[in-house]
Length: 147
Image (tube, rainbow, N blue to C red):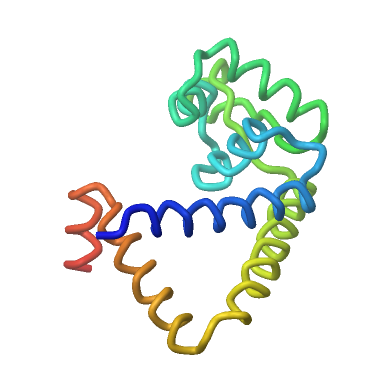
């Protein structure tokens, strides 16, 4: 296996990823963007769940949410079962921002892919698909194969 080549390719992909993030979301920090992505995947997540997903302590996640609420990126809604529990949701503004990020990222990566040969692109897509499947936790990978 050529891990150095994989490392170089990953570095180039991450550079394109970061450039797209900077272009589409210049006013958001990486932790803020990561929080939006977690809330997008798990609409209605509570603060404790968000902190766990981000690997941060509850007070740090709370301050992060305060900043996102103040900037109009997320909204806090009292929970249905327990009104003391707060559920987090994206705002239309943050949905638009994430859509812009994805469009920018796809455009920038597409520009690189266009410089590759058709055979190289096909091999990359096939290899990345296998990589994504292999990177899944074993229980998720098994569920995906049997679905």
